[in-house]
Image 1 (cartoon, rainbow, N blue to C red):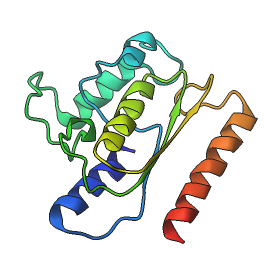
Image 2 (cartoon, one colour):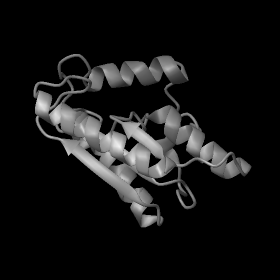
Image 3 (cartoon, one colour):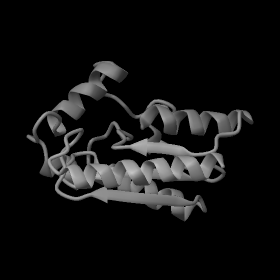
Image 4 (cartoon, one colour):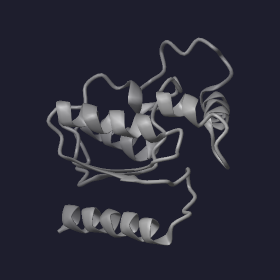
Length: 150
C-alpha cells in the first residue's frame, strides 16, 4: 500500500505516468504510529503496533528525529492529495493499520479524490479468520481494478 500511494504521489508531482487507481490493501502509510488502532492493537497477532514501529525504524533508519520524513517514504505525511488517482482502500477491523488507512481515505475525499473504502470486520493484519469476508474483500478489490482499467 505505501509503495502504491508513494508512486501515485510521485507520478502526480512529476507529471506522469498516468495511474488509473491506487489499489491499497491494508496499507502502511504513516511512520508516526500515533492512531488509536495502533495503540489498541499494539500486541496483535502476527503484526501489531510494536512491529509497525520496528518496521518503520528499519525502513527509515534508527534516527529518532523524523520531522523531515518524505511523503514518498510515508504517504500519510503528504499534505496535498489533490490530483491523485482514485483509490480503493481495504483495511482490516482488528489491524493496527486500520485507522491510518481510514484517515488517508478521509483526506483523499476531502481533497476531491474518489475513494472506495472497505473495512473487513474482525480481521487481523494479513490474516483472514473468515473466508467469506476475505472473498468479499478480494471481489471488491478486483472490481475496483477492473473498473479503473476498463
